[in-house]
Length: 105
Image (tube, rainbow, N blue to C red):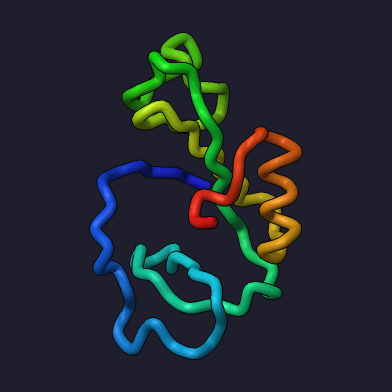
């Protein structure tokens, strides 16, 4: 999973969304737009955990960012594209593996 971090603009809903398809949010990998999703559906996900204080901009591990993560404003974003889990299992994975949470939880 290629993870790009940028400023959020909270108007990223796809046309016709949010729908009544579920209480969770997914990001369309092609368009980057948000869609409602069933929380029981297994999907790839991103974990968010605290990074060291000097990891304020994207950079390598020497800059305080854990290996394999992207860091911004003191947080590490861990792409987990090879794992497909439902919301509950993904949240547990993020807590157990990184001491964090789902990025959108």
